[in-house]
Amino acid sequence: GQQLNQSPQSMFIQEGEDVSMNCTSSSIFNTWLWYKQDPGEGPVLLIALYKAGELTSNGRLTAQFGITRKDSFLNISASIPSDVGIYFCAGQAEETGANNLFFGTGTRLTVIP
Amino acid sequence: DAGVIQSPRHEVTEMGQEVTLRCKPISGHDYLFWYRQTMMRGLELLIYFNNNVPIDDSGMPEDRFSAKMPNASFSTLKIQPSEPRDSAVYFCASTHLLRPEQFFGPGTRLTVL
Image 1 (cartoon, rainbow over the protein chains, first blue to last red):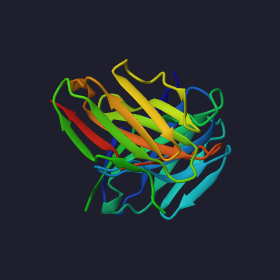
Image 2: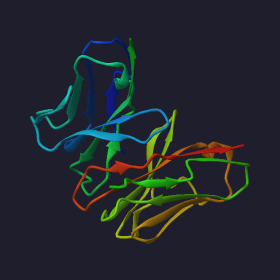
Image 3: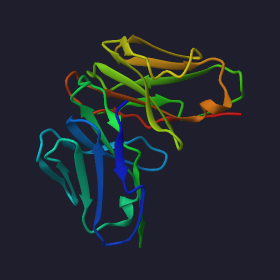
Image 4: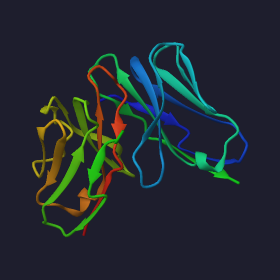
């Protein structure tokens, strides 16, 4: 099956610091999505990317669709305590299409005030 | 607008009992997905429906699991008989045709004793 490698697995940062995380796949993706999951809740969509090279921002969040179409990056600037949670990448593989999404294993972010 | 609605939010049951999880997708969405989330395996796709028809149930772990979608606004995931290893958070998600972005419900946390 499709493999999505997400790193790092966890991060502990000071409030105000910037955060970077990434996701790589073993095959070409048509779409990359980034979700955030708060404790006890479902994943919430943060950013969607639809074409190679695309750079999209949502407030302090910026994500990029890698040129090779096999990776994506998410950056969070000037982190705040409410950024705490688990961030998941997800993608729609070219070979499977349809509406199937493959999910990364998540990056658990802890922000120290 | 109401998002994806799931019930119950928490379920505690004893091994061998039947469990039924419920989901109401976002109105107008024609794809519905059931996922299971555990620490060990992350988010796993169990089954998904298009226009109330099951399309891919290859993720359903075994015959004890079954899912139905009798109409466009309601789906159930049933486990009979339940086992302790079924303990997990079960999510329902929905989306439009040709849209990769899935919108998740708040999940049902299932504990089988």
